[in-house]
Image (cartoon, rainbow, N blue to C red; front, side):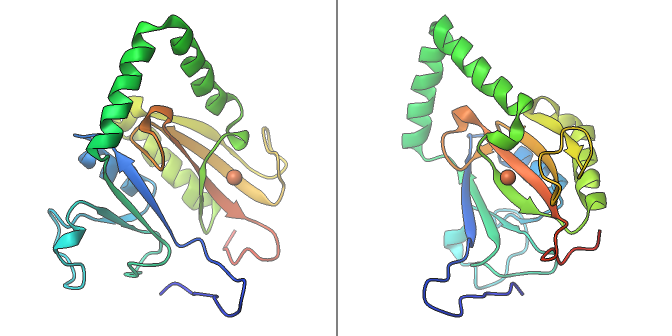
Length: 203
Ligand SMILES: [Fe+2]
């Protein structure tokens, strides 16, 4: 069970993130999230706990902690983009495809994720050990179906090449499979291990 330290006025908790994916990408999104090491429950295909109810159908439910079944805290949801979003994104993609300047700007924006991932937008996931981060990055790299949908960084370890912060191990994956905003810009995730005295991790 997730600890919920909402023990006083002014205390807040980052409790869930709601992602969207493009029509047709549900299975690949599940594969991606599982390769990250997360447990995914699909109410459309998996046995589901009774408290979910039929309203859960559109969502992939992603538990961040092994053995956790909390539907409210420390959880991620992913569902197909609403028609309004998909219509906007489809129109934008058509404009970009017809405009070399916009294509160039998009390519430069994408390249920035590979060049300096720490400085680009992302959602951070805490891992208990560098070993687990490396295992997740290896699963992502070796997953054939995910291949061209991902851009993977190196694993940056404290004091090592590319490291910008000795308090953490960091690795980044950018994907166009899902997003917390427009899918057009994709979504970057940081896989992080905390090494300072508040880490609570194994290595
Ligand atoms: Fe970060």
